[in-house]
Amino acid sequence: MRYLFLFLFTFISLPAYALAPVQEVTSNKGIKAWLIEDHTNPIVALRFSFKGGAALDPTGKEGLARLASATMDEGAGEWSSQAFQSRLDDLSTTLRFEAGMDSFSGRVLTLRDNLDASADMLRAALLSPRFDAEPVERIRSQILADLRQREEDPNTLAALSLYKSVFGDHPYARGSRGTLDGVKNITRDDLVRFTKNRLGKDNLMVGVSGDITPDELKGLLDRIFSDLAETAAASDLPNVIPTFDTAVQVIDKAIPQSSILLAQSGIDRHDPDFYATYVLNYILGGGSFASRLYEEVREKRGLVYSVYSYLMDYDKAHLWLIGAGTQNARVQETLDVIATEWAKAKKEGVTREEVENAKTYLTGSFALRFNSSDTIAAILLNMQQDDLPIDFLETRNQQVEAVSFEDVNRVAQKLLTPDKLVRVVVGQPEGLK
Image (tube, rainbow, N blue to C red; front, side, top):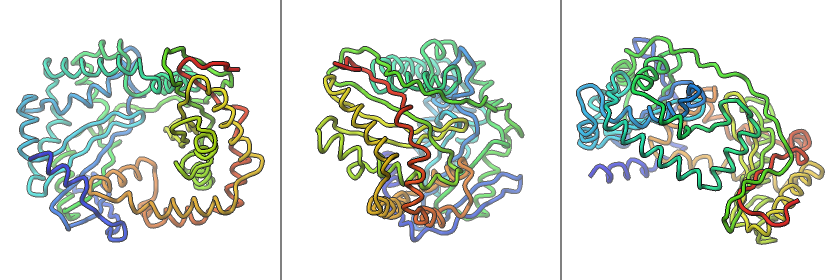
């Protein structure tokens, strides 16, 4: 029955035009959240995060944040692992944690009638996780199996090699999932210390959507979060200046199709040229079937099944990534076509029609993101993580619409660096220069 409820939670439609305004709610004890009320269905979704994620894992214990995220709901307070999970099943509640590179986050999705009981479960998981030996070792074994499997995955190998090349010794280079040795070295004391030091009210952000009023939310926030530490341990990461080695890096792996990943410098989310770059990325590779890379690399030449580009924004670094996969014999041609399209956009620019088509898609598809209470709560949380204004949902499309043809071409000339692309290939490419 739980899975039926979760299916309904995920796919209940909430048209964007019907969204209530975003409200900032402050509890009696000073905890803040952003809320969109929707009383259509008896569902409440809560998303939260703490600043500082896997990049803060201690050296030699890489994977600490990930192991904590996977074990905090495996028993807490009075509930053993089995009792905790059974209780969630009885409440038809989803409760999960996740470790990202720059944040440690969680979510609760439940029926309104079960909200108080679900809140108590989350409170227990945050304040008194048990970290009993059996569930910790069971989850540790699962994570180690995943890491071993990912050692054989060409896309993972390409990403880790690229990050190492670009970020050097910075924590970003190791990814967010941990290492085999790091996960093996983590003790129960490490997990307990993680929750005590890293989860503080001063680095907490909360997004909520669903069948709840601001006054009700105030009580809920205090019920869940008020007894957390006032301040978390310092979470400042060192700054990093990415380096871009243009020599092709090849990781030999006996597979019929090579995995390709390229990167150049990206752009900060708050840069005045962000939206022009966002439109440009859609035109080049972010627009799937409508992108230049898809047209040139796949449609005209049949080199790949998929090719894409996207902007990646960490707290301390920004990259522009391009990915593809192709037969070993056609790797060089694929790399050449990608570099040619990157250089063409820089030198010749894009067309007015491409800019208008991109803007039409990016503004028209925005409403499709608001398809469930859980998704809306996640968007509210992401807005806070990105330090966006509370009226962002109302102004976002206006900012896309304000991008001009001239803006996009100016940014293409300014930002695109076809001669400085980092290129990583995993496979056995033939005839590579």
